[in-house]
Length: 158
Image (cartoon, rainbow, N blue to C red):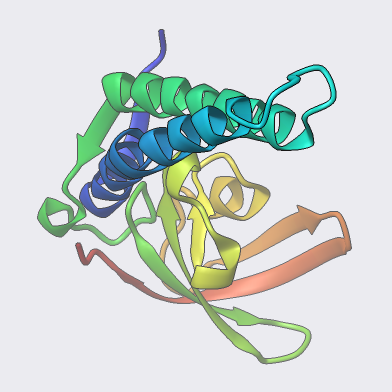
C-alpha cells in the first residue's frame, strides 16, 4: 500500500474522526437498531433499515479512516523550509486576471478542503506550484478554464 502524505494537523483530524465514529456514532447506531427491532416486523420497518444503512456507512468510513491512518506518512511542516514550493507549503498567489490574492496550503488528499485554503498535493493547482518559487508564474488548467497565478509568497508553518 502506498503511503499517504499528511500534515500533523490532518493526521490528528483523522484520528479524532475515527474516535468519534467508534465511540459516539457506533453506540448511537447500535442503540437505534435495538430500538427499531423492538418495534416488531423488520421487513417493513423503515427505522430499522435506516439505522442499518447508517451502520453500514459508518463502518465503511471507519475502515477507510483506519486504512488512511495506517498508511499515513506524517510530515511536520514546521520543520520544513526553502524557497521552492513543496508539500506543506503555504503559498500566496495573485490571480493575474483579477489581481485577487489567494492563499493555499498544499496538503495530503485526506485533509484537502479548498474552502479552507487547503489543496491536495494531487490537485491541478498544487501540481502546477510544486518546485516553483516566489516571482514565478504558473498556469493552472481548471474545469472552468485556464488560470494564471504569480507566486508572491511561500512559507512553512505547522
